[in-house]
Amino acid sequence: MVNPNKITRLYLIFLMAMVSGCAKEKQEEGGTQSRTLEKIVFQTEWYAEPEQGGFYHALLEGYYEEAGLDVEIRQGGPNSLAPQKVATGKADFGLARSDEAIAFASRNLPVLVVMASMQRDAQALLLHRENPVDSFADLNGKTIMATPGATWIKILKNRYGIEFETIPTDYGMGRYLTDKSFIQMSYVTNEPYYARLKGAVPKSLLLADSGYSAYRAILTNHKFAQEHPDLVRAFVGASVRGWKGYLAGDRSRTNAHIASLNPQMTEEFMEFVLDTMEQYQLIEGHADQGEKLGLVTKKRMQEQMADMLAAGIIEKPLPLEAFVSTEFLPDDLKNWKPSVTIPLSDKRSSADDLCVVGPIDGFDSETSLYLAYKDLIKLPTETLVTDIVWLGEKRMATVLSIDALMAALGIGERSDFVVADCLDGYQANFDAEVLSKNKPYLVLQIDGAPPKFWGFQDGAANFAYYLNLKNEDGVLNPEHKKPFGVNRLEFTSREVKLAEIYEGAFANLSPEAALGREIYVGSCYSCHRPLSGNFGGTLSNRNLEVIAAHAKYNRQYFLDWTRDPQGQIESVKMGPHPYAEEQLDQLIAFLIKVP
Image (cartoon, rainbow, N blue to C red):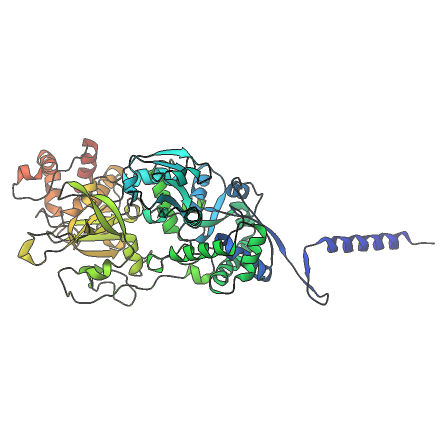
């Protein structure tokens, strides 16, 4: 007689064996079973190409497998919809621009940037060499063929104060090839190659050179990141390794695989793509601007969001954790900071030298150091049309962003407050929000020559710098952020620098007085310095305590002084302040608290 319990046990053992056999397992040579690999779906935005080479290299070289992953790379195309597939869980990872993640997050869709595959996106405008358009400002009044609603369209218009028409892209080059004045959206790694094959002589305006700072990025889903942090970390680490190997090692097998997936990838074309990526430093970026292969920084993502806010692409600020995380980066990237890439001296050797003070590697944070003009002009600059205050007109200028200068100095994110001192006693300050949203920059040249200033006290220097903003959105009084005659920049902490007006008598202000304090910081500090501190300008010859006394005891005089300083004291150099009544009430509410 057969024991029914024994039959049941044998059946269960059989089922377990069947289930075990269906698990995702790899067999090593000789039949030895290895660990189970986790299935991962990675959706690219286009057909296989060298711009994705690092990921295919990681796949073919076994880097993903070594990290415990069984990765399927799904090719994209015109309608790949990688961010949408990530948001809905149809793909674990997707390749897209980082600004797409911000736009999705603004609509409460759960995508998260976890790595950059390109530090500088390859999107560009394609023109003929004969086209007189040589800068983004020159696009004013032109027509461009582009993807409808592309983020860069509104950002360029807002940043440069220009208008241009767009027509929908047909994904072809026929109109470009027959019209020397035609301008179209392109990828600097693609269309210029085919334009040359057809006899055209192309030129490109890389959108990244406009300050448009989107990464080409890896996105994942919030839920996937929360539930599988180790898988995200493993995919990012293996992908970074793949890119390093693809750029520096033997990539012949990887390129052959790419060509097998996409027959348009000829050997000659792939060499063009690789040369172009190196020429424009798309993958590795500019180290002196704080860029590195694979790296994503919250600061730069914050800047992208500020650009999108200023251009009206998104309606309100979002918390950074809604669209970016740096916790999955390899440790060497999380802890990486650029080294100082510009010569520094502890002595002024020329009137052209710019004094800098701050947390610069290898120096005391209080030490005054000097940068020569010839070294500043070598840093990554851009050319744009900007207003020149003392000329009262717009001119072509070569500019260096404060962000780029901070990166060159190795300061990175260790400073959230920049103070600019001028030769005449004026002082401007830029907090983290202004640095991110309004993007201040130093003007190094006007129409190709260094700007010169005369008439400052003692004739000590006839050269100084001019600071301006890329956009003025949200700035209370933009003129206070456009000082000229700048000869010193201090990189510091807002918390440290403003401690005296947040402590003691100022610790518990009313909401109205707290708003007045911010007006004082953003505006009044430019010309007034408290007796107790070393922060603030001296242009007015009236310290904080004096104007506070006016506010306390003679409101009308204070109002007259604020609105028309030179009408009260002719020798005062300070200009009028066009504040609304409500803002003046807020300022007075703060000043009456001054001891």
